[in-house]
Length: 135
Image 1: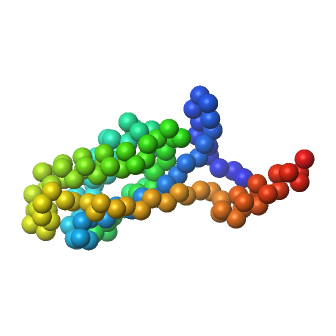
Image 2: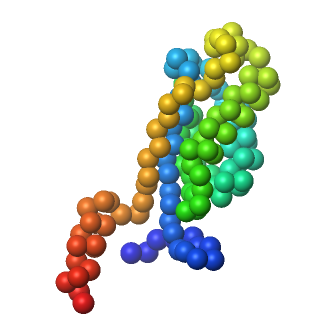
Image 3: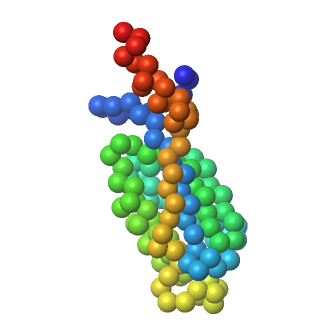
């Protein structure tokens, strides 16, 4: 298996995640300018959590993010911090958003976070099951 691994002082790892963030009420407020600003904010905050952006794309009512993390990354804290900061900044910098969204909300409270990897779960399961047999 040839996969690029990251490392720190005590471990070797490859932790990749697919994050989907949805605009509150699925309002269609995203355009290229707003998406680019959201991406900039992500890139600014992520190093504080040992997170690296790999890919970013948006539709009118949600964003897809592929990122790498370290074992010590606190993902839920990062996501909540990002959602809070980006919501505040984007509403301030793009006042037209307030015409489609009300109150303080920008993001939906929920999100989708999926682990990704170089192998399917069946390949990993088979590898683990065969470890005892190979000795």
